[in-house]
Image 1: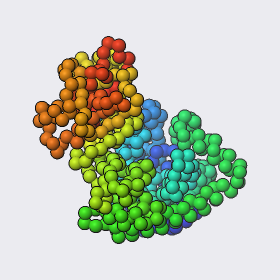
Image 2 (image 1 turned 45 degrees about the vertical axis):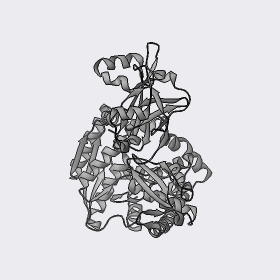
Image 3 (image 1 turned 60 degrees about the vertical axis):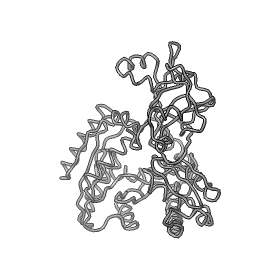
Image 4 (image 1 turned 135 degrees about the horizontal axis):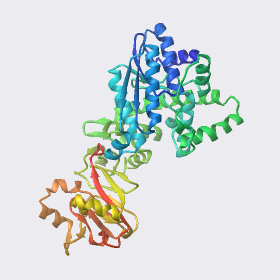
Length: 448
């Protein structure tokens, strides 16, 4: 395994001589073997090696066991260890993120803090990379998704990325290296585990040299993708003008180049990479013009042949189909939380304002859309007994004209059912017969 690690370090120029490197240490076989390997190579490469561990507090005693184990490992090796205990479940609930997404954010934020400008080494292996690649195939992907996990991303390096899980286990056995096992790794409840336990063994049966073949493919895809990205960078530079991006000029480039150029530009403006459907929608607007909401409070629009990005979205009309519990909109997210009527009643005793955020799930007609106000929109607000146009409602509330398109309106196939800050239409109000209540809330782009 050490030979493979050295080849990987040299092939990708991962670690300059004399570098300081922080190992993301979970206590599992991969991360522990990474720590040992870098310690073994420290003199040869002039490395200063430290470690960081995050206790996500998600697995009870097992999480605490892992924390104690990494303390013992680092003490025995004389490696400086930084620790963080984080209530990931509580933070995820407060921020509106998924638990896995929240845990990853907290973990990498902590690693960056510990690294203090140095390198971060994570223990992703070739096995992890191939599992990611296969998962990407199942969802539909481009060449970029067929590159697996990148060997280097910014200051994050992955020295084990061309070692298989078997390589790691053999290294641990040969060197009497102890490690802990995450019990969730054995559960096929998780997609990655099903790929690992069911799909990969079948591929190995088809080709006994599967791992070598997979590595050749990944290396080739990385090289091809890097070339296409470099051409896309040149195209983006050539099409950038003072007002934005020359949409008509960009449209003359081949589609693979256009999509990569758009993805890069969108990622610069948004808080994270956009989904392919948003990039393809932007591409479809280059010549005819128009606009689309992409992510994190950003609207992409093409006017007079210029592609520009509007942050906050209050300047342009917008419309997004509601999907799931968290829907990206120009000013952040629309959050929808389902509650029983009983739970809602208990909450209402303490938080009376919840009445303006609640609708009866069963009274919704067809698909939901969250959007800006349209001309002629009207609502009969619950408890008021009168129908008013949104224009009049906003006038009475003193909402400035330039801010009105930034007020979220929820509509089903029969019309407006909720207006942020005003409440719901009486057609969807919660009453004594309501069984499921939907609580609506507009979150900021940071998810708060």
